[in-house]
Image (cartoon, rainbow, N blue to C red; front, side):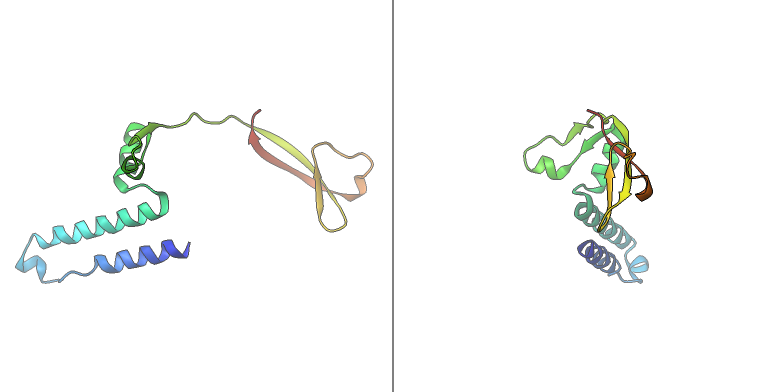
Amino acid sequence: MSRLLIVTVCSFLLCGCGVERAWWDNPTMHLYQAGAIFLGADVVSLAATDKTVDDHIIGIATDEDCSTLRASHGGAWCIPNPPPVPMIDRTAYCYKSLASATCLTQPDPYNEAMFVGTRVDRIPAP
């Protein structure tokens, strides 16, 4: 997490390296600054998700998983999103034990005095 924070801070600090008078002396200078901001956003996005900002935009528009990094390694740029995995709820019954709580898939009728509570886990369906 600290690496991402350092990249983000450095990118935004470098994006501000423009001259205020540049707008009046050379009106196209703000385009360079906008490009630097976009480049900083690309660097942060690439470090955090292995995708550029363009990859995210095109992926949302086409409902596919797009990655320039994958394409640069010889793979396809966009691939279909995998189908969602069906999930089921599994209830665990937890009881006090010597050092911590022990959770079982079935209630223990002989250990009702040590009952702590239940926990519901979402797991992939078999």
